[in-house]
Image 1 (tube, each protein chain N blue to C red):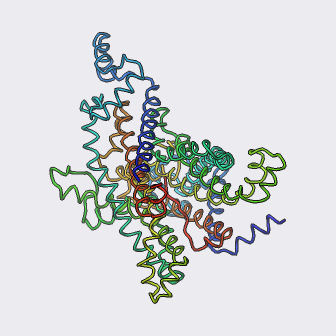
Image 2: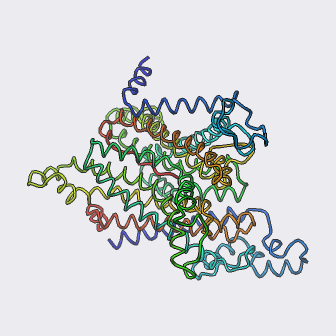
Image 3: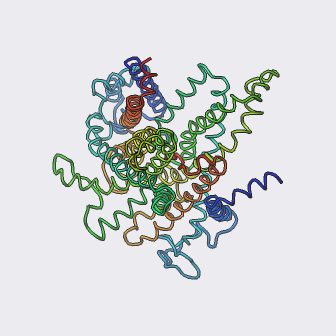
Length: 317
Length: 286
């Protein structure tokens, strides 16, 4: 198991290193001088040169890449040219919104999707199953931002239960911050819940045909008892893989849904930085997004290896 | 004739029949917009803005006074074009990689699988952000971003399908007769995994339409004066509270289009593999 862990950790580190290099060098080839941007068009050559030196822009690309990597470890990612603030601080501030949103949506989609999938599998071929799977078809096809717009009309504008947009920092008013994230979380979670419900149902229907379920039934368990005691745990394995993949899409979805609710998350930070040509911010924020996806996928793999005894054995060898 | 009969037999499956008919109607309407729309899509008529449904404009007009139905036809074409070309990119690059991985095995297979995992860490939106930063936003940008995301999907499906074909006797026979790996892959493996790839293509097509909508909505995809279903939603957002139908029509069109393609894909898969008939597809949106 330790060997497997080390091997996977090395894989994660290598993936992140290649991703960092790709993002850095792709954005580095862009024309435009960050020093000129920071000082304005009337800046003197001396002032520009001094700032370039201070920002390390006079160094070769490889050296700057190394400095950036070191900065990722020490938390010093430099200053944002457009916002005149430390980049690490900006990213951390935005993560307070984007992370709870993505994880909240993952949790909610799991809480909705898995029970519905299990219910559909238990009632395979009956009215409830057909109805739920029909709903799931619609859920999968709904663009999350469109669904978000509908939620705003119903729950914010008509019923006035929740705010239509904006965000108050957690430190200022935790209740208001929580309330601001309810509608975006639902908008992100429901389409994902539809996917999860479908995958859970498929997986459980598959497992229900296996010999060990038949044995459990032969020993006197009812269909539902057999499914709950032996089926669900086994059916969860493929579902977990999908949940890992889903997290990548939730991160992507966060960026889109932020737009509907005017939320100052990581997505907004990136878009403002792109329009201001503040590439230092863009590259660091992008790497944080990729890093989140890679780490979550790694954790899912790990969980998979822990839950699946066959993989555990193979990993142990 | 045999191919036609095989195709016609799919219609016995209700999912496929419904999905195929709906998709066909939408695709025909989208293609028709190349030569004809009820009203021009670039004509601005401010006096007629936000018009209610009438005989002249069946589902009303938008904030520029343009006919919404005509806009939907043209928008569906852009969305479809982006999704189709993105599937093309995914297939042209991904399928050979998958075939190569299955046929060659060893280090090359491991390398391709690693590359696959790497690309998976870049959801289409992140690739789109990078391309936008480099070249500015456009429909082509969205197409490439979604296409890159499709590559590992097709590589996986092709490899999975090819691995099972490689264990069959006739492949051994082909190998003994002196054919090279690529020749066997092209002549014997590819034709046998084609149906698998077609099913995946319909799923990726529906995901492509959703992804294009998302990217255009946040300004990374299609740009005016061109239109797409996602861009129509972006433009409708400012007027959404006063004129909700502006956003309802493009949203519904996306839902129907995606559902139709998914139903068609489900139906095709069920026909090919009855074992999976009760199974749902593993499709996650990028």
